[in-house]
Length: 205
Image 1 (cartoon, rainbow, N blue to C red):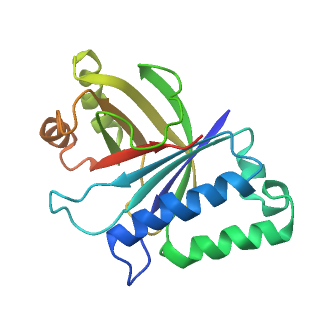
Image 2 (image 1 turned 90 degrees about the horizontal axis):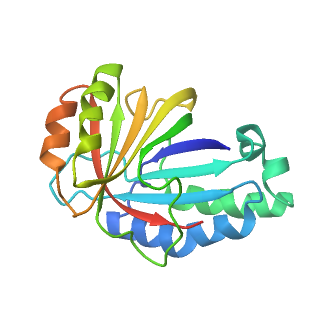
């Protein structure tokens, strides 16, 4: 199984609420309907309630049997019309440019896979976009913390599309028993070695 992580900004002129609603109510169902090469699918919508700066609005995780097949419209969709429908919707609310990475996933704590749900996952989640290895080493200390229910390292194997945001060395997902728990500690550990995104997680497939 191979994995992709996308960093999406919203299109100019859309509010965060409009972007979130379109992603969950329109785009995600359309992707599930039309994309043939997607094995698992999780949408993480960024919480900027703490006044964080503009930038990433969604972090999307996609699992596939083949990244090459997923990225190829001829294999990822049954017909050219299906591909056109999805890409047209994508361009209607996601800004350009955006970043995409192929990653090597290692689940270091918690269940290997989360079950799809009808709404936001319980607890809290932080996604750390680490720009170097030092942040990874520091974050590893969270593995033994009782508040951490799941811990996943996604080391970048290939940068597929970049230029929208600072280049990333690895993505670390820290799932928390309580929303907001450990967030200041995670941000302190990362320091200037990356960005910490507090997100609401929606496991779609």
